[in-house]
Length: 401
Ligand SMILES: Cc1cc2nc3c(=O)[nH]c(=O)nc-3n(C[C@H](O)[C@H](O)[C@H](O)COP(=O)(O)OP(=O)(O)OC[C@H]3O[C@@H](n4cnc5c(N)ncnc54)[C@H](O)[C@@H]3O)c2cc1C
Image 1 (cartoon, rainbow, N blue to C red):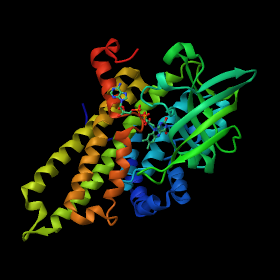
Image 2 (cartoon, helix red, strand yellow):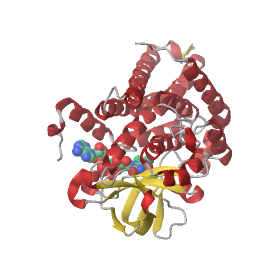
Image 3 (cartoon, rainbow, N blue to C red):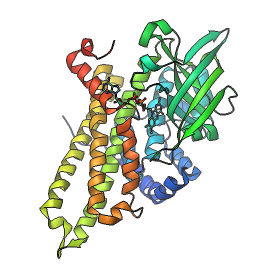
Image 4 (cartoon, rainbow, N blue to C red):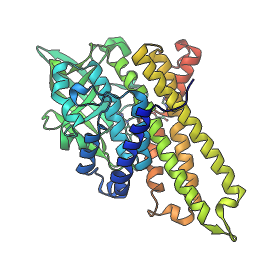
């Protein structure tokens, strides 16, 4: 066992941290109020290889492994605790990887170079209005083959990156039933462009946080797709979705660690200087003890998360672990990381007193942003518990068939 970083990992962290602290951190409040990530930041991220970084070099990606991808996620979370940029990063890193792995070469050539250069957005569309957790029971979207193309009908809801896709172009990896009688074995994945698609209508939702990236939905009314926009094998879409979710959950964990550490650092600065009853706040046990608990929680989730990333790297590079091992590790990380992050931000808001409730500090953006992860983005907490229980007890103990 070796807990040290390689030189390459250390250089990568320093490079991303330097960029994120200088070019992202000063703009986070503006991103939150303008509800838009400035183009210069997107271009800067592209230049550094931070857009869909897990995509192969052939398509402009950086071919990053998951440990390296998590290092970058952590640094982006540290710089932008509103979590808008981290969300853009992790969605493209996780789902770009799936598209790169299973998409047809024609479709990849068409979109991936533009995704990695920041000219297109790549998102994920699984959730439907009638439910995200029970997608097998709730999904109504269908795809039917007509000659040499596909026709998609249905609606996706609570989808990240609708405005970005409308503005920049790009695709959402969209799950649709191709064999409605086959349950989870009857789904396929498609690359669906939203921009200038006359048979696709988009809507927007007003979120509470991570305002720099939009959330909304889209409906497809006989949306026509070329044959090569089917991703991977027909009726394997559900498995690809589960693979992508594990990756996204591990990256979420890493963004939470970075954001938690940033919040704690801010809190530590404050309690060392702010005085009450003639002494710095940090001298009171009532302040110190929660500080130590939060610190220990963040350290434990960091270890859990990097172990999950390591498990993924071992699975993809050496086939040492299975998708079940990865799903378990990712679910544990996603179960803990957003809850600890929320708790530390909430605590620091208390330490800040009344200013903690103002927009003077970024804490309130963090509280609003991180809640998206525990409410549901990339799977709810109870779904994480169901995955963990499935791995501990066996799938015959699942609450559904
Ligand atoms: C900000 C944001 C961005 C998102 N972006 C995307 C995106 O880009 N693409 C995408 O496809 N989806 C996205 N989602 C949707 C997300 O995946 C869903 O919200 C999530 O899967 C939950 O689905 P739901 O909202 O329909 O809640 P439901 O499935 O209706 O669940 C409601 C509640 O019931 C609980 N519950 C459900 N079943 C059980 C059970 N068996 N046992 C115990 N409790 C249960 C859940 O844990 C939850 O607390 C996003 C969500 C948010 C909040």
